[in-house]
Amino acid sequence: MALAIAQRAAAVPLAPAMRQASSLFSRTPISTSSQSPILSTADDTERLPVNTIIRFVPQQTAWLVERMGKFHRILQPGLAVLIPFIDRIAYVKSLKESAIEIPSQSAITADNVTLELDGVLYTRVFDAYKASYGVEDAEYAISQLAQTTMRSEIGQLSLDHVLKERATLNTNITAAINEAAQAWGVTCLRYEIRDIHAPLPVVDAMHRQVTAERSKRAEILESEGQRQSAINIAEGRKQSAILASEAERAERINHAAGEAEAILLRANATAAGIDSVARSIAQGAGSAQSAVSLSVAEKYVEAFGRLAKEGTAIVVPGNVGDIGSMIATAMSVYGKVGDAQAKTVAKQLLDQQANVPQEPSIPSPPASGSGTGKN
Image (tube, rainbow, N blue to C red; front, side):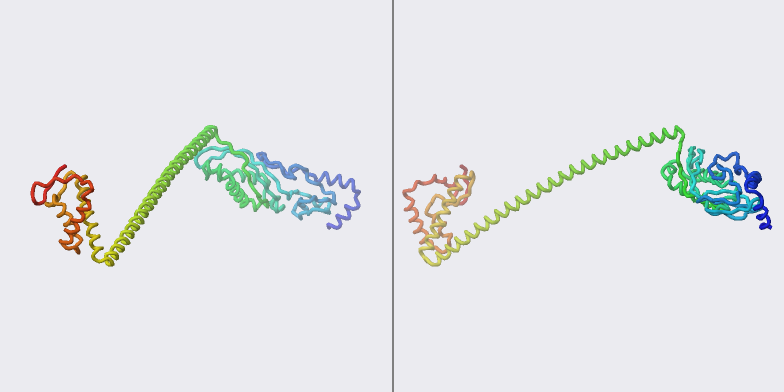
């Protein structure tokens, strides 16, 4: 039957056939809802192409052909041959990415702040059949779904989270739209919130909050600076005190080391002198012992003389007026010299000092035993 119709169509002149087909099959664009603000699809902005038997389908475009009122096939880009009077191009769908402007709408946040938001939705048709027969107007349906989804998502967030998490909000809206739009043959690539308008009192409160927050940060930074400055000063004083104490300690150690070394040197010198005297005594026998006894007696007498000059109250032996006895007593301290030898040496010492001026005599004590005297 189709072949017979094609043969009859071939017998008809081309120009009248085209005019007849144009009058029979040309149609106005499929009207959208009167409430829809979306007018951006190809089949809404252009008249549907008429059946001229031979047609060229543009790239990234899908033409849906109905045969005798029933879906027949989708014409791919390139050459297409149609049967006049039988085939009709019912829908034209663009497979390109398209942008749908979402008008401004009101939404209430979780903390009861009313916001005015608008956005842009980017979509693409991936199934022309579903986009044509699955929904009356796919773009209008998606735009309405985007608005309701945005209200729902914003109602779950506070104002601060809406302002800070716009990327997360966009992702959630895109996922919710894709979940419902798969049956319409349309995929939502992304959704972008364009503008967010808050009431003026809320904006003023936000400005005051920002100012207070910055003042708080400035005060915190200033206090931190003062704190760090005080810490640095205290640390400097601490280090200075530590260094001063270490210097004083080192000085004392050096001074003590010097005194110890001096004492050691004096002790070594004394030991060497004693050793030398001991060797001399051992080698010189009697004469050396007499010399030692004489030296001890001299120091004994000198000690009493200094004691009489410096002290205000002294204790002296009973025979302090007898110089010979004092010398004999001093010489007998040595232990190795007898009393007779001590007296002899003492007499010689008195004879040797006869020409030397005598020191002031020490007054005798009132008693024969030990006593005290005052200058």
